Length: 244
Ligand code: FES
Image (cartoon, rainbow, N blue to C red):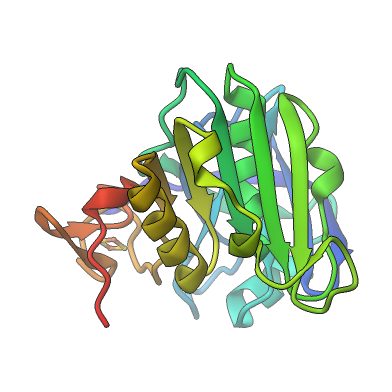
């Protein structure tokens, strides 16, 4: 099956922090928080497309916050206003919306990307916990609906000095959403399980097709092997099986 990519026009592509960029692409894009698009900006397919989560959608303009992690994302960072980019999506499952009660969001580094859109779409007030290595970035976009923001940095330059899981209090919430480095999410899920709080996790895996055809993104869950691109990337926390 040849997936149908569409063309978008890059409106802007701005460096927001060291190797973190925000790209705005028009127009008429759709999607829910937690879903992603496969992106490519090369003609002769030297690389696989890259899965990038939706960071926001404003009047059809889609916003991607991404980190340069290799050749593909480095090429994205070179795109300029007016350039075209190929997109496939929205793909995967999003975070459940319409949740009642207090919500806690725990994000680490570039894991804040889908949580910006999630904050905008949740109909309840949330507390946002964000952990970074050196300094925070993009936190000015997380204002709507957010009651309290807690920041930690490994460097101690901002907020709590140490890991975000050291100040996260799961017992304050009825539901928790998390996205970020696997070791952080694993601790968050463990804390939620002990506090009897339901948790939702956004998993990240290298992807080739993005549409469930290649099995390259499979992970072990309590219901067997499942594909991050199609069955996820959002899963219930209790479904995830961590391989030690
Ligand atoms: Fe191909 Fe998920 S990336 S099945």
